[in-house]
Length: 256
Image 1: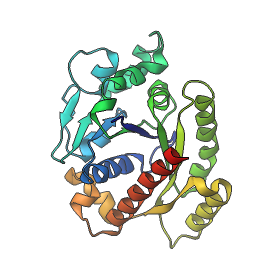
Image 2 (image 1 turned 45 degrees about the vertical axis):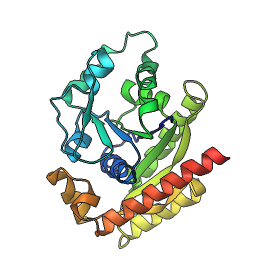
Image 3 (image 1 turned 180 degrees about the horizontal axis):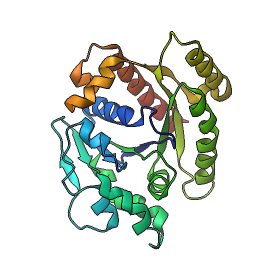
Image 4 (image 1 turned 90 degrees about the horizontal axis):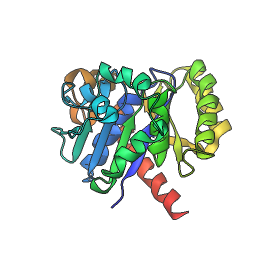
């Protein structure tokens, strides 16, 4: 068993990246796969989203050399966590002069890959050293993208970064797809942007779409993923559909 390592990345904040990481990780775990969620964002929102302990040894200590295990169990069966807090913001600077600094996470994950089926990495909204480490360590990437004009402007940039990483640091990195989030079907602009994205990126865009949904917004304040907060909500059903499509896409890429 070698884990599929999936990073969720977008240099723009507020696109639903953390919400997507938390919910997909939970749904995969609920499917009886051993799953690890790595909170790689100093804001620590993935940690809060599953009621994790931000004071536990986490991603910062792990990346900067702590010998203690950063793994913490969660109340969700089959889902473990490596937490984050604001200390992680210093990692970009502290690791800058390390030898092979782009490969620190990849090397750390070697010892964990055989313990899990899936490892998901929630990246910060930037293209700093933490995100580069995630790109280098991952087998797959998902780009959550809000249906708004500025998000559309930024998508070409992150696609260029992915191509550069594939051409050097990590030739095995595969794009699982672009996942449209916070979609409001009543908005003409949302519809137009979604159509533009599908026109330009075609099969690279998930068929599943995550709607703008009150229940999705409420769930983090209760420290719960949407499927545990309100499994019958539109948001929960959408994330279950997206996760099913994600697993299908991985299987298709492996079979190719």
